[in-house]
Length: 100
Image (cartoon, rainbow, N blue to C red; front, side, top):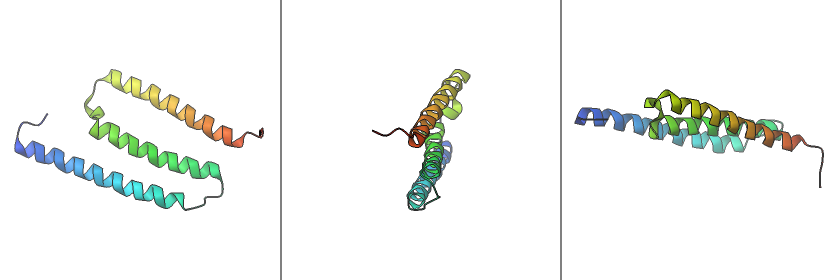
């Protein structure tokens, strides 16, 4: 970790930049939610893509996953795989012709 004031300042600058990026992408998410891209599936996909990017920033920087061992990355890949599967199931449920 940081041992000198210069290193702490460098980390603070990175955290501030990532925080600003998260704020900007939050505004982008809100702006995109007002735009109609033609179908609900496309709107949900774009929103989830932005949210996934923001979650990746949080995990990499604030949770320090960018400095972890390879086993953490294997777990992260499996988690992303199952999260993508859950998103796919959500999108497929929107296309389901069966209604109650």
